Structures are given as C-alpha cells and as structure tokens.
Amino acid sequence: MPPAPLFDWHDSRHYDRTADKPCVLCGRPTPLRSDNGKPVHKVCAEQWTHTHTTT
Ligand SMILES: [Zn+2]
Image (cartoon, rainbow, N blue to C red; front, side, top):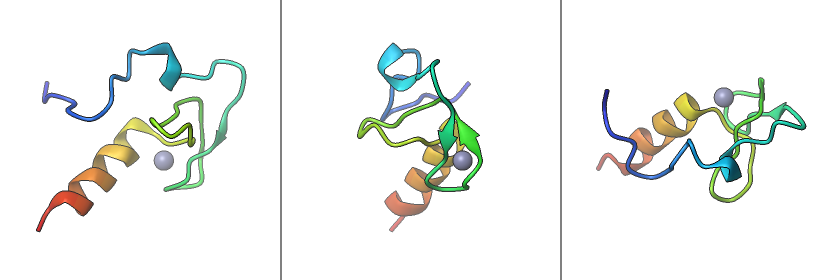
C-alpha cells in the first residue's frame, strides 16, 4: 500500500457517519471529509493532490 501523506483517513474527524454529502470533486455521495471539512472521497482527494502537486 502506498503511504497517505496528507490525511489520516482513519481519524474519525474524516468520517461523518451521520450523513453522506456530494463529493466536491466528483459529486457522488461520500461520508468522508477533508481536513477542511469538505466532503471528498479518499481517491478523489489523492487524485487531486497528485494533480496539483506535480510541477
Ligand atoms: Zn469523489
């Protein structure tokens, strides 16, 4: 498994079990939250990070 450098997805802060909200990146429902509290899939966040950190 590759490391997840930005988010600790096992932290309960990143998981809202009470509600799924539309992912800000792909629009599909997700219970996951980013560090900023925005709904986002793990894979979407990782893809976004990869896209936006490559120079
Ligand atoms: Zn998504």
